[in-house]
Image 1: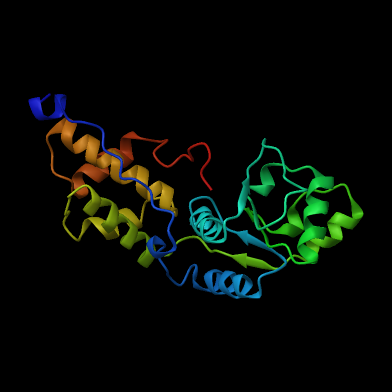
Image 2: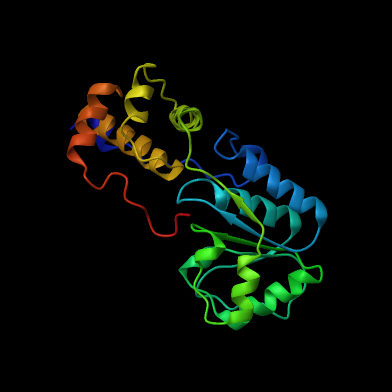
Length: 226
């Protein structure tokens, strides 16, 4: 191992949840437009749906910051009596029926409630018939899996954050083989950077080929990713 590799400090660029940092593409522009129209109405509930790593948490957190919304995640108390905008994250990981029914009733009379999940409201489990009807009627903004244009832009930015400029032929190679998510792109770039330093090798297709062959779990979801 080289001296540089021995003393290399871990590097992880700070995540920005600002709306300006969100990357638009054909895979998310319709969902963003739906969210913006909903924000302009200033009332009611909206479900923001998309696969893991598609950017829904980024969009939701940007809205929550701008709106001053309270944020609820699975396992935390639900502020059913608190007024003002509310963000409910990862609804399909579990939520108490009566609390959600109460919150949707509040949304019906003017409270903004944004709910994120990986699957559409029609597939959310519920044992309350009245809640089931409300879920079925929820308006939805749905983000598709990231397309090639978005993923390449993400990869380029992640490499740039680390002051790395790989050859252009690396991108089509990675795009044809990687998991279709922003979180997977983040892990891939980090592992390529670490491997290049540890092995004193350049970041290129040859290194990517070795890593993709060695790491069966390279794209496994990390806890909390949505």
